[in-house]
Image 1 (cartoon, rainbow, N blue to C red):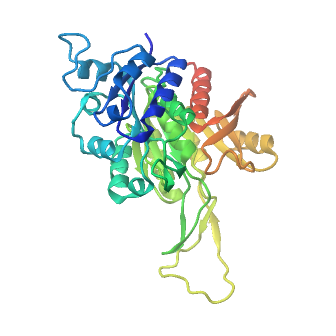
Image 2: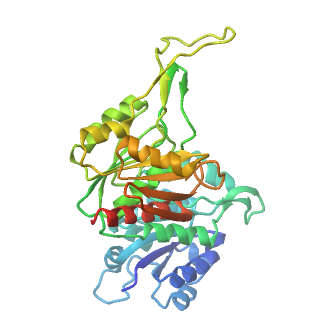
Image 3: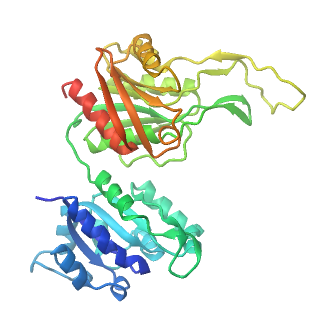
Length: 395
């Protein structure tokens, strides 16, 4: 049986582009079932989507393609992914509020499938405080928002509001639709993001880590059936739904959280960029500018090494952010920290690593195996990395 995508088409001028999205999803092996809002039907017709998908199209909450079967329950349970494309400000508001005003929003109430939102609207509407608050609510519940593009929208104005590309929307559905039992019953601890080491109440030592790779590892592990403890430094990201999120700031706080979390863990992945040093003493008040300043630093604890000492039998996977001498830097850390494996990032490249949405890794194992994970979205890289680790652990 094919994976089902329930496609909610709402009343934007961009509704016609949902046809291309539906077709591309079908090319990728999905069964597409479309729901049109009343306003969407002013731009496109149910007959068009029935011809494209070969499936009945629902609009009214009382539609029943199979007599005696409640379609909003059947479709909700069959859905692998819910996709709102295009998503208007009104549709976003209704879904954020939990209301049900048509067939798609009723299905959304009953479904536990991940939701993808692809907004399209006037730039002022998109950036408005109510709309952004509604999107934040949906993200907090686990929805993925495929951000609209900058450019000229239907009304002739310029700004962020154009529907994202078909490729970007389909890629988001493919990622959300990924499911595996490879890590079912396993508990994975993942660290992510930077740490901040205070100098005074307003200044700190940190680094460029966005936390994206760690968060995508957490999302991929959850979709493989694992329970996940995500220990995160300060980042501007929403944790994947289902993760046990522990927020920390400093390296010491992260160490304490990790040593607690690994007591019943099956795997530790250290994707955080932990600051190597901290100030010997934190000034109680803001340091005033008065010419040159000398700052005494002390080395921070090595979280992965201490985790290995606390639980020598626990498989630990580290990350190495290198700019030169990549292989030696990675392999040295395997021996020094007692790692099962290490993922090497070439952070001198601008197209991957820090802040980027894509990555490429070389995975070095303690026994000498080397696996290249080709450049792709950070989610896809996370999936490939976890699959290889699980295979090596005979899970």
